[in-house]
Every structure is written in C-alpha cells, then in structure tokens.
Length: 179
Image (cartoon, rainbow, N blue to C red; front, side, top):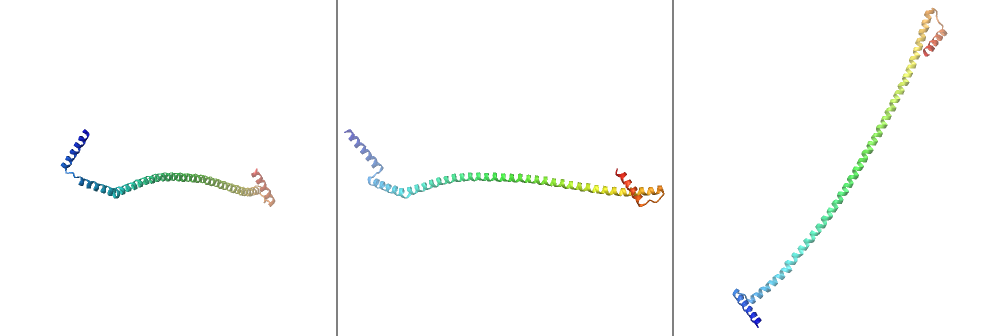
C-alpha cells in the first residue's frame, strides 16, 4: 500500500507543478504533434538532401584524391621518361662529338700525310731540277774548259789546231774533269 500512496503522492506533486507552470495536456499534445510534423518535414526536405550533398562531396573528395594520386604517378612517369630521353640525347650527343673528333683526327692525319707527300714531291722535283742544272752546268763547264784548253794549246804551240785536234783535246779535258 505504501507504494500506492507513494505513487499517488508523486502524481499529486506532478499535477501541482504542472498547474503552477501552466501546463495543459491538450496544448502539450498539440505541441508534440507539431514537433513530430516539423521533425518529419525537416527529415524529408532538409536532413536527407543535406546528407545527400555531404555524401556527394565526400565522393568528390575521394575521387579528387584518387585523381591526385594518378596525376602524381603520371608526373613521376613523365619525369622518368624525360630523364631517360635526356640521358639518351646526351649519349647521342657525346657519341656525335666523339665521332666528330675521330673524323677530325683522321682528316688531320690524312691532310698531314698529303702535305708530307706534296713536300716529298717538291723535294724530289727540286733534286731532279738540281741534278739537271748540275748536268747542264757541268756540260757547259766542259765545253768552256775544252775551248779554253784548245785556245791555250793553240797559243802555246803557235799553230792552228784542226777540228780533230780540238775534239781530242776537249775529250781529254772532259775525262780529267770527270775523274
């Protein structure tokens, strides 16, 4: 029984408090129904669209992160390809430089050999010309010496020498000069 008295006491106290604050059950019930209607309308027309927009944004952010990772990967690949192309171009350029140096060396060597050959030809021609000139000079000297010997012999002997005598004296002078 005490439980009943206790429950009745609590109920009386709640009724007094409600009357003191001006609580009316009909008004409270209408406010609860209004709150439920507003909550359902907000849930349907505000909360669900906001959640949909938030989900869409979350998906866009996830897609953007995936795209950023793809772009980073593509950039790394592009940089690697760029480095490979640059290394290949540098290797080709170095090869071309080496080939040009080698070619220049061959050209210089060939030109040097051509110059040596041309100098040797000039020296050979100069020697030939010198030998020819020497022979001409010696022949002229022999003729002149033979003439001088003939003139001197003619003056010393006091007689006129015949053509045979002159030839014989010139030949003897040539033999003595040659030996």
